[in-house]
Amino acid sequence: METRRSSSNSPWERGVEFGHKLACEQLARVKNIEEQCRKSGARYIEPNEIAIDYLDRPYHIMLPDARVLSEDTGVEAHLRDKILILHYFTGAKGTAATGKLIAFKQLSGGASYFPAFSRRVIVPLVKNFGGSLGLLKEAAAKLGGREASYGDLSVTINAFDRVPVTLVLWKGDGELAPNGNILFDANVSDYLATEDVTVLCETIVRRLVKEVLPG
Image (cartoon, rainbow, N blue to C red):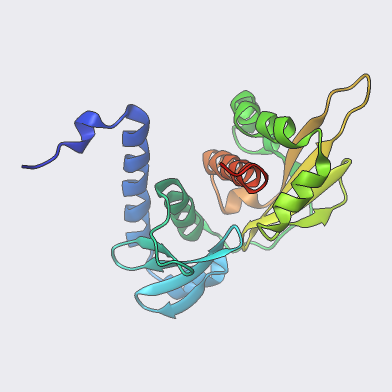
């Protein structure tokens, strides 16, 4: 008997599934896969397979069915990760890094969406690492992160080849509570939409927390 998945899935799950469907359709419209590999920094393997690095792990996009498999395990990526990977690959414009860092509020629509971004990303970052900056450094190293020179501690993680994400923390003192921020190269919108940036940062913080607080 056929299972009616849409009747049991939550609206959020259905939204993610619809986003995945659109991402697959966007991939199917890419006319020159080799050129898109150059723009995104992905590695062209053959007409039906490309490799792309995501959070310090290699993944393979299989064409034409748009499967995204971990190179290490052969397991298909989680749906949210898969959407991010496909959006990055298909949307990459190939623009060079500017060397100028910007905050989320400076992205298109970022100012109006910042309260949600703060709740989903900055608050968990500060809550879990603001009182122990060394834990952030330790966790970031497991995602290929490197120390940067902002705040009391900052780390830069290459989420994708052309999308570095810098997490900044201030430890606070007797008068000021710990605080944090997320910085991006000014060209980030040439690779990911603002909502994708939010999901990406949320994913990074969750993985960092998981690295130091397993289970």
